[in-house]
Length: 601
View 1 (cartoon, rainbow, N blue to C red):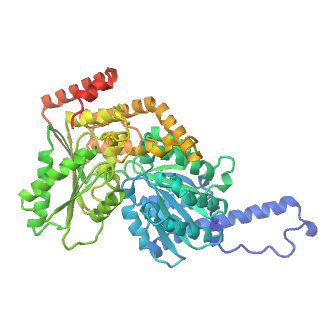
View 2 (cartoon, rainbow, N blue to C red):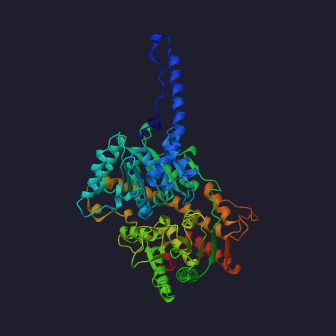
View 3 (cartoon, one colour):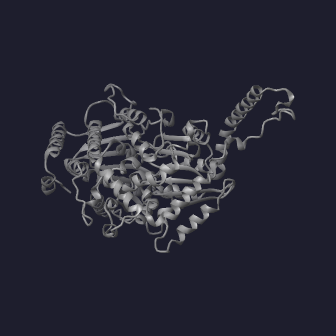
């Protein structure tokens, strides 16, 4: 169990030698009343000291001088067991410092903090900041389990296991462990899983965090390890029959639709009532310094030319920041590869060959993705490498944490509104900046979304289209398939048996999830294509409530023109009509017909 806040408070005044027994004539009721009054006094003292302690740790360990109001609320709700059993889902805007809450919380609680990350690229920047922690209140260690070498015979893994074993409930050390669900559910890594469960019993596992909780929910529709993690870890750590043993639970995201919350509860075995959820209000989510651009075009060339112009200006114009960077986002890995090639050619033609394009997509080796994100977002300067443009799909879109990004091109229709607003949030991550994001839609990209949405993909092990499964085709999906060794095995071990059960669970839920994805894709089209009020206002309402609402068209979020809509009326109506027709046809058509001719790359 996490150490009580009372440990940091001086003990209350003694009541004297006679207090506490009945020999002085005091009744049991009086003694109990005295103790309750003393406990209330100590609670008030702890509440007064907690903010001071949080600010002190934040500054002295991580160099962050002032915590924001929402960070203070989150830390208090997690660290003080008086608040909702120390379980919190934090929904605040991108760039608001949710990761810093995790860092400060871990150092406050000491012991082990496990941070589950759905994508490796998400942790590239967080790892760097945690590794810079000052060792002034006990040692602070950070390990990314997915980065451990796989060819050392398990030596690196065993070192972490041994280090965890060394901790006891009086430790002042803090160990941050980043891990993907697929790592912890790998049979080869069972020693670490077992030791974490042992640490939980020894009350050393103090915090369990889920980063980008909306992705944890989305990826559960195709990532079987997320379901396995529920049974192998969450149901044991957050056992409903033993709530006193629960560590702190902290889930964070900037986008959490209301329909995702019950699924997050089911995946983590953690009950989240209204009191366990903290959402920012509309004002908190306001980002009017970002301009929306929306176009319906056959190709993305105009958008790419604009980005090349931005890079050219920063190189030739002495008044521009030379470090200014831009991003191209898309859905499929195939599209990302094509866009990177086209963009490189345009840069060379414009005389900007010194500006390098970083490519990150789901088919790459995990370390290539990790290094790509770190190189683009980091502050390190290279002698012969100038990462000015990032081209990525869902494998890297939520992992971009750089205060140098000023322009984004979104090439193609996103799968859902959370993705739209997460991608917008990659901009202007520093006060006083302005940014511009352009969304370019076309019928081809909509067909690709529908292809993914309706599950029209092959499941053969060597299929080239295997990566197209699920939300955003962000990562490899071979986990849905049994390995050759598992297929040949005549007797199933517990891991293989659990994997098969979770695969059946995913297959049984395919129809309901498909309907949900259809609704979410329609929300994207409604958001951009229907005149239902200011996009900024609708985004703020969606983020603060988890639902898409119609806003009064007369409402203007600010005096300047913050939304740019560029499409001819005929083109607009024709495109929407085609989108509706395609969606209707697909619901009733056979997948073989669709795969033979309609899927355009």
